Figure 1: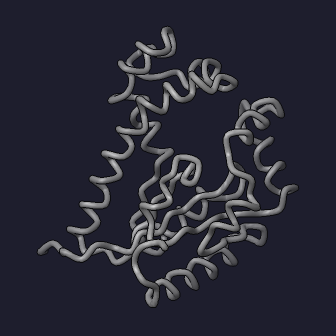
Figure 2 (figure 1 turned 180 degrees about the horizontal axis):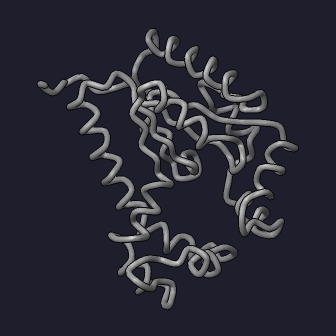
Length: 206
């Protein structure tokens, strides 16, 4: 099949921890939309490309050819300078893989793609997208989801939340909001409405 020169419409997908962003991304993929999963790529980098550089910057955080996420988290969880050091290693790699994903999607003739990036606003990446989808739910549901995760504690939750823009601010900046409070079928309906709407939207953000 011949490639396409028409770039796909880029949806930036984001949302605070526990909002249901990963599930929403999977439902976009279920509908045939190519999804770039930044978190999944970080996992891949921690098992290959980024291991040597991270071990040099954060000694004793890697073994058996992969980064121990728990040990690395202990280094950076409450240390802004250490977190920036880690980001300086990982973010350029992520952007290279993101560019390759977009190139492949263009060649494949995709009309729409999703960039699933948890810290989209916090890292200044919103300009990469033609429109932004923010995933949200109630504070009660969010907290219940987060604290049910393995190895999650109220202290860790507080540290993670401190790195993220408040949900109210993310929703203010969104072109679309997906509320995950009412089950998967409801989310699917919201996604279908978004995909229909973007057919009439211009490319690029003001």
